[in-house]
Image (cartoon, rainbow over all chains, first blue to last red):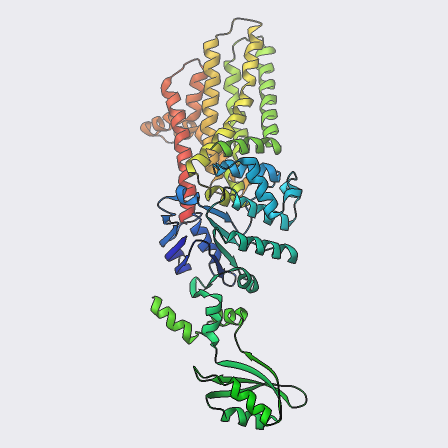
Amino acid sequence: MIEVVNLCKHYGDKKAVNNVSFKAEDGEVLGFLGPNGAGKSTTMNILTGYISSTSGKALIDGIDILENPVKAKQKIGYLPEIPPLYVDMTVKEYLYFIYDLKKCKLPKISHLQDICSLVKIDNVYNRLIKNLSKGYRQRVGLAQALVGNPKVLILDEPTVGLDPKQIIEIRTLIRKLGKNHTVILSSHILSEVQAVCDKIVVINEGRVVANDTEENLSHKLTGDNKFICKIDGNKDNVMRMIQSIDGVDKVYCDAEHKNNVCDYRIEADEGSDIRYELFKKIAENGWYMLELRSSEMSLEDIFLKLTMGEKIPALAADEEVEE
Amino acid sequence: MGAIFRREVKAYFTSPIGYIFIAAFFAYCGIMFSYYSLNSGYTKLDSLFGSLLTIVIVLIPILTMRTISEEKRSKTDQCLLTAPISLGSIVAGKFFAAFLIYAIAVSITAVMAVVVSAFGQPDWNVIVGNIVALLLVGAAYIAIGIFCSSFTENQIVAVVISFVALIAASFMTTIGNLIPLDWVQTVFQKVSFGERYYSFTYGVFDFSNVVFFVSAVVAFLFLTVRVLEKRRWG
C-alpha cells in the first residue's frame, strides 16, 4: 500500500509538487498522468527516497520513507525515467550486482532466471548493456526493479522507447504484476493508462486535478444523459421533433453529412431515458436512425480539458470536499 | 557495502583507469628506485619514499574522479540511493575499492625493499613504517578525492578540484609560511599532510600521525555522506 499525504516539494520559489495526496491499495495499479514537467517524476523520486519532500508524508506499507528509509526501500522496486544501468557490465553481472545490493534472500539463479524470462531478456543475458538497444535497456531496467520481488513497484514511463509489440507485452506484464503488487506507473500516454490502470491520478503543474477510477472520471464529466445520434432526415424538422420529446434539455447539430444526414448532440434531463421515445418518433416520421451512442468523453478529452486549466464543475466540487 | 565494493573493483579493471593507475605508479617507483638506490648504491629507501608523495598527489585524483560524479552523470545513483542500504555503506564501498587498487600499486615498494635487502641490511622496521605511512596518506587522499568527486557531475572538474585540494593539503606548511603570524604557521604545520608523511620517511613512527590520517579518512568520508544527503534535500 502506498499513501501520500499533502506532499510538497519546492525548488526555491518553484513549487514542483504542491499538496499532492493519493492512495494506492494492495493489488492496485495506479496511473499517474500528466503533461511533461507536471511533477510526476519528482513525486516518484520522493516516494522512492531519492529526494526528500519539503513537507508532507509518503508512506510505503505504513512506513515513512523519510523516517525509516532502509526498511521502506526494501519494499520498493523502482524504474526511474532513465534506467540506472551500468553500461560496462553484462546484463547478468548487472542483475547479480542488484541482487547483492538489495541483499535479496530468494534463491539467486532461479529468481533472476524467472525475472529474465518474464521481461524477455534471456537472449541478451550475457551481452554488455552498452551494446543493447533502447527497448532492451528499458526491459533490463524493469528487471532490476523486479529483483527481490518487492511489494511496491514504481515505474516511471515504463514503455518509453519500446516498439508496439513490446508495449503490449509490457502492459500485459504490468497488469499481471498488479495482481499481487501495488504498482504506480506514470505516463503521458493516455491509452496506456486507460489499458492498464485501476485508478487514475491526473496531475498538472504540481497539483492533483483529478483522482478517480477511469470509468468514474469519464462518467462524471458526461453522465448517462448525453447522446450522439446520427439521423437521416430534414435537419430542421428533426431538430424540432427532438426538442418536442419529453425530458430533452438541449439539442445541437454537430455535423452535417451528405443527403440530409446529420449528427445531433442531445442533452437530456437527469434520470429520464429518451431513447425509446426518440426511436419511435424517428420511425413515425419515416426517417432513419443510423447511429445512437452515449457521448462519453475519452480519457484524451478529459486529460486535455483538465490540463488546459478548464475547471469542470463536477470535479471542482469534489476537490473542494477533499480539501 | 560488499556489492558496491566488488562492482567498483571490477569497474576499475573493465575501464583502463585501474591499469593506468597501477602502471604509472610502478613506472614512477621504478625510475625513482633506480635513481636513488640502484644507481647511487644507497640501501636505504627513505629518499624513494620521500619522492613518492608527488606521484600520489598526481595519480589519486585520477583514481577517484569517477567514483561519485560518474554515478550522478549516468543517473545510476538513482539505483544506489533507492536501494535499501545506507549512504555510509555506499561511500565506504567506494572508498575501500579505490584503496584496494592503491594498495596493489603500493605493494611494488615491498618488492623494492626485497631487492635492496640483497645488497645490504635494510632496517625492516623503518621500511614497514614507510609502507604503512604511504598507505595512510593515500587513504586520506582517496577520501579527499571522493569528497571532491561528490561535488560535480563532470570528471574533469572533479580531477582538477581534487588535484588542487591535494596540493594544498600536502604543502600546508608552505602556505602557512606566507602568513607572518607564528600561531597561524603552527596551525598550518599541524594540519599539513606532507609534513606528517615526511616525518615517517625520516624513520619516526609517531602514533599521533597515524591518528591524524585515520581521522582525515573518517572526516572526509563523513563529509561525502553529508554532500549526498544534502543533494536529496536540495
